[in-house]
Image 1: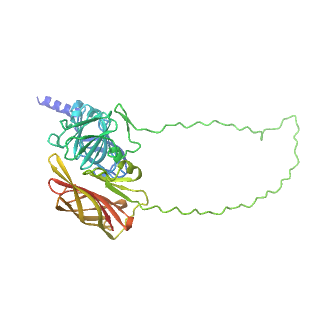
Image 2: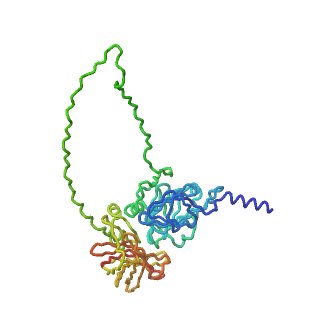
Image 3: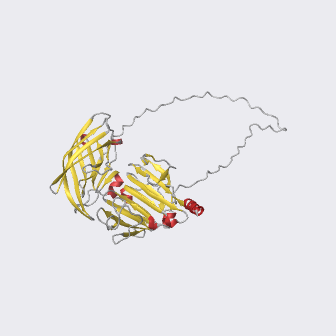
Length: 457
């Protein structure tokens, strides 16, 4: 009996990849991290691993069953579960979580046979697959999904679909989207269980954060390939044989005739004329890199301030948060002083409060006042505070964070404490000192706030 149990246990170990390996990194670029360390090609991605990318970061992961997971800039994802049962692929269990940003997932061989056990979570939605290659954009408020091959089933979180669940949520509130529905996307708003089917536009994941030119191309059959340049063989040059008679002996029957010496005139070398050195006019000084910010989604019937489809072509997207996006224009890089500090006053803001009642969400306008922002260049840090008022109630907000490269401001509160803002911002030399940041914060158990603020020195 014991021998039978031992053999059964040994077979289970050999047949199941219960080791926590999920895959390996096959490409990493820019600011990209795996579990807090710089991401490197060949590094193993394990269950529980957290992958993050900065403004220029990309990470490609080849999964254990030949699938593909790609994380684009300004994104964060976690491998919750990746367990492949090689003997019984239908028992495979896989779960990803995209915390923010844009990711692409292509189902591996085992996942295609265990679609009932695959889950891709965002902060507001659960995604299941039909043997699929899909792309997702998410923040804390909105999730958008497009399909390259196959299909997905998407549901917002609610009573019948919980984040801690496994497998797709397939209830009355779920919606499907297939690759044949070209130009369409599924969008889920926080607090709304049923996704909306929309025409594509500036809110598609590829428009929010475009792929690299070397990102694998999806094929109709579900596979993908990376395009590469032609492999040209070097051309072989013809061998040229030079024929000369300089050293050939004269014919035996003919006398050798020596010509008289030839008088060679002296060689006169003309003077070398050195052209004058022409120094070109200096190139005009580039303007400072500016800041573009505003709402990219409609709120309370107000039209978006930014068309991301257009802005992505002329500016660099630095961050999105809820309804707001932050861009940087081309020009001279901002160079932060090495010491000293600078104070800023609140010049303009655009803020909204959200109240959640179960699956129902109510939006209301808000205002921002008593704002303060101080940047300490020597300590490479900042502190900020402001009051937010909505529906005749006022809430105090505050945040602190680090001053990064080229004037970036980062302030993150992963614990989600009440009154503490998550901040992503930027400094500029425009108008003798300008700052902009976009933010979100929790006000109480049911209420959150999302907004953007412009600051002047």
